[in-house]
Image 1 (cartoon, rainbow, N blue to C red):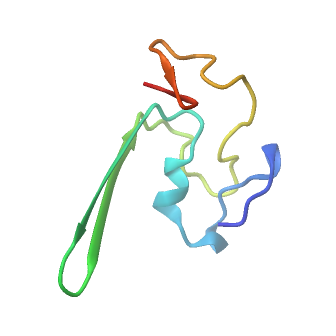
Image 2 (image 1 turned 90 degrees about the horizontal axis):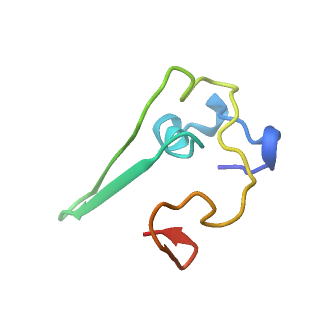
Amino acid sequence: MPQKSGQQNLHLPLNNLPNFGKMMWESLSYVGCAVVRCTSFTNVVCHFGPIHEGVGKWGSQIYFMGGRICGQCRSPCVDGLCS
């Protein structure tokens, strides 16, 4: 997926990643994925949320940069992520 910075990082149909793009939204709090490898294919399933009306609209901004790492953690920060 081509990356830009800040307000230029848009969710566009030409990326051909409609569901993956939704997982990148700045308003999402939860993302969880599982991968199962079978003989002839690999199945990947991800659940994410909370979803609101603006998530996934073509041409809308995917995420916002800013804030300090772990600045909004309610739990300890481990390796740059809220634990």
